[in-house]
Amino acid sequence: MADKAILLREQQYHQIKAVLARLRMDSSAKVVFLVDKDGQEIASQGEVGNLDTTSLASLAAGNVAATGGMAQLIGEKEFPTLSHEGEKESIHISVIGRLLLVIVFDERSSLGLVKLRSKQVSHQLATMFDEIAAGDFDDDSPFAGITDEDIDSLFS
Amino acid sequence: MTFINYASREINCKIVYYGPGLCGKTTNLQYIFDSTAPQARGKLISLATETDRTLFFDFMPLELGTVRGFKTRFHLYTVPGQVFYDASRKLILKGVDGVVFVADSQEERMDANIESLYNLEENLQSQGYDLMKIPYVLQLNKRDLGNIVAVEDLAAELQRKGEPVVEAVAATGAGVFDTLKAVAKQVLTELRRG
Image (cartoon, rainbow over all chains, first blue to last red):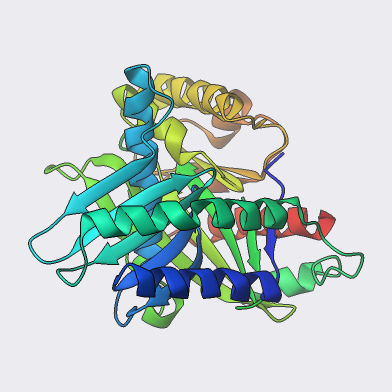
């Protein structure tokens, strides 16, 4: 059996976006986004432009999974933060339960500031996500009525 | 795991292509990438060695269309097939919604198929999944080669639970979309159950 589906309601989505928007301002970051540990992008804020956030989300999750695997090999539970510093652009990832908070920043910010600000919102994001993860389908789930024809039509 | 965003009206699901080294997992993804309109798919990311062997995973997001007003997006992943990349394979199975096992039909790869299938069952278990309960398709690839095992014999050895068995030649695209459809259908049917 696959895991239970995660349902992100409209109001929850906007609440998360608001937290990310504030974090982006406070940390002077270019882009801030929240990713599930399985690589699904939950929400993003900032100068997304041509940035391929879907691929970035998947690679960030792969990166955390790989370093987490290394952590376990040396007897650590996981590495809670990862930073990659480039010449101009840098990425900071913090692991918050089953979430990854990914911050892309440049010389307008600093690693210290980004670390500090992400730490400040991590508890709030974790609480919000716990509520989301606890959510379930309503009785009027739009998917309960999916027919075989609906599914077949995707491939026609 | 399936991720449903009511704000952007999107359903996101994760499909993993599993199988022994050089069975054609990446070729499946490459064919889907090449034959899908650019607006329906994202980039094909390949984390591969210099000799094009998958090192960590291949990844491609694919949008299939709309169901009940929700865009259906499938995140397609492959695992590295070579035996010694087992730690990576385990990680990629996290959060999986459906699995395609790509078997190599050549006689000399039978043992590799069996070993990889056993490895899949074990790795799924280590992530808390049960192959018998997860959406699953068996693809018999490389049906165009000369030294292949008969379909019935491959199915007898590799089929686990009456899952759909699709004959394929991934290099030319034969059976590639049938396989994807078979697994996607099961994933969406699971969603209907809640």
